[in-house]
Image 1 (cartoon, rainbow, N blue to C red):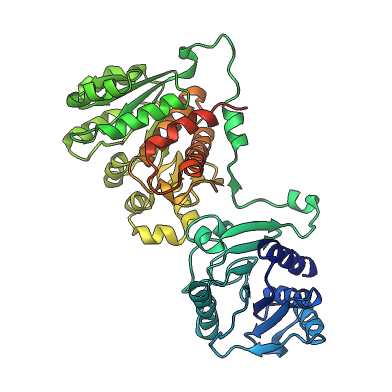
Image 2 (image 1 turned 90 degrees about the vertical axis):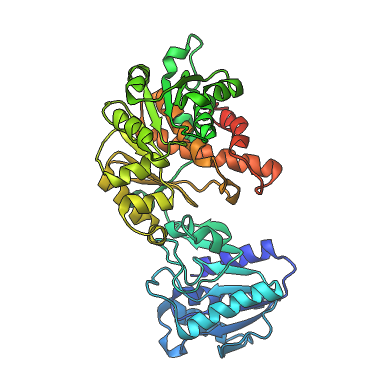
Length: 466
């Protein structure tokens, strides 16, 4: 607890070195104990501290009580919270509630959270959260009635999965980690609930190429989509597959779109397909098939999807292919499904809001119901494989909330799969490449106004290990 309190206070001082007055909200558990230590350290280093305790001091036990008694030996004022926060100081420390919270916060706890957020909004008072923002579910990243909107969260021992997906990133702010000196042998005995994807996952999947390589070594992707008025989706997916390193890429689309696709990117082989029978020879020459970008749900789309589902080749289903699948569910081992929360809701016959309440449960349910690899897109994209293992992507930014981003991801998954014949590893690497490319693009030009095609130069950069 001393280590935890010191870690938070050190982070506070680094981020706000001119802070001279801090306000610490403490609960009755170990988080409150951390808060008492933070207040004591502040006093020892000449920073004025005020503590609000939202519990009877008689409820404090163990290390939290020891920390409270040490604080009592200082002049730091300790108040009960009456629902108002007149003078928040320069920084607020949230040490109210920890990871054990499961029900909605109520009464004085909710009032304290709302007071903290009000001070942040109206007085521009920054907030640092101890371990997790109070009111945020540690496992799901959902808000339990109300949650502290932190600028910095210092989390301990293990990163809580709820900090990285759902609403978690919006509430935790900058995320810092401290292992509190736990021995590495302890971690070796534990099984992680999820793994974060890194550039190393990309490098393992896509090592440097041999000098004698040729296009036939890197697969042939077939993209199927582009119904009336929607050629751009298939064209973006196709270029994403090329930029990811696929040897050959073909597009099957409405005949009216062929000229536009080829003129925009002549490296794409584009075929006008008006019937399922015309699709058959294209399927036979493909290494893997991606269907859905701009597909629509009319009889043309249904016929093409039906033909695709007859093949035994690896598939990627996105967009309207997923919506069609939701009407007639199938189980298959060699496909990757890439729904956003709305599509996931349709696949699981539940509102999208339910998907977002527990994204980990949702991605497991998708994989269990449909087989293969499930990719649940969104803030903190999740990938669940056939063994139930989950990987999480911490990269990405709000600039990706734009049309065409999903089409680009579909193409990257297909491009990686064509080169490697590895479903799970391709989905994992593609999710990271997609999100990291968006981060690089946003860093250079900003998030707002980011276009899906802005990712292409950075996709190429990321698939070429340094």
